[in-house]
Image 1 (cartoon, rainbow, N blue to C red):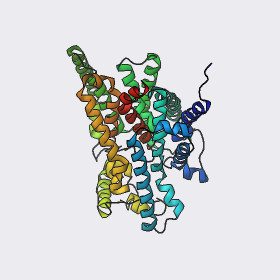
Image 2 (cartoon, rainbow, N blue to C red):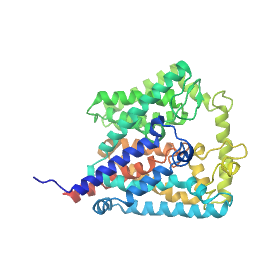
Image 3 (tube, rainbow, N blue to C red):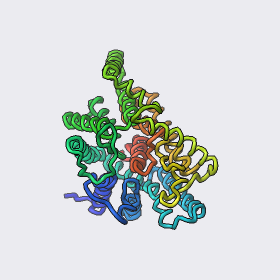
Image 4 (cartoon, one colour):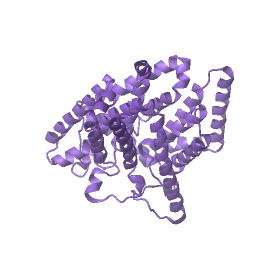
Length: 422
């Protein structure tokens, strides 16, 4: 009986286990573990040094035979090299620009960008598994636990005001507000696409996941930008599955019905008013974003090549967050990335974004590819939409970047890979 290569199997099992571990670490072990002291410096809400270290170790110590399997994507090889070199350049710039920061503070401020080498083992894993379905199955399992814990915490807080999760307390509309982080939001789009496209084998499971995710999105996370962007992604998925006049009519009726229901519930009007600077709940956030736009644009113009670099908030708070200490790079999306990394963000973000955009245009031009790749099209819209705010290069969401790189690159090379196997 043919047993196969035990080393190879072991290697890819380790990759799978490590990827799952990174998902759990990204949401701080579901908020169930108290992270304090030195550990918080490398594994906090915004500190991804631990994740980056694991990603780099995974790549460096992969079996040599497995490394041969992850080659074949010249783009990923070049991208990872450029991203790492850009990060090192920013480290050098920051070290001389901000003398009051010690070397450790400088390194920790930028380690989240060093998570990108994870894209190579992930790409190899997708090739080994023959698709991205298995990894999304694991993402669904992790997010299921996360959704349930968040809903449980939300209900307990509403009933008693008690917080059992080890997270920073953030209140909005008299309820606890918790981010879904890197993959929690994306899986809502994925699960809707699986159901609407008819590809979901266990429809009940996907219905439950979609319902849990939607509840967490609206009632727990309470982030307007995500609500709008995910709503657009869902509308796009509906419209992509309109290859006949009847389906087109059905899709238009469904979208119109949803719009009418939302309008009758006064949700659309409330959403519009929330973006006003005079809004009692959201007004201060809107004002802060407007001021941050001006501040970070001026910061970029002062240093267009390197931006502000990797600043430690405890040492240079007013440079990083403005005189009032309320600005955040992620609040202004791509502009924040420009202010942070300067034109070096071309290597981090613009290059892959343009490549994915070209790939998606190719799918849209072909009706059969349009339907088969409806999730990837919606995924790209999700990435492009969050570029205005809540960009995935932010430390809180950076794990989504290597996932995106691997998934899009596998989809792009899939026809060539099939020929290679044949």
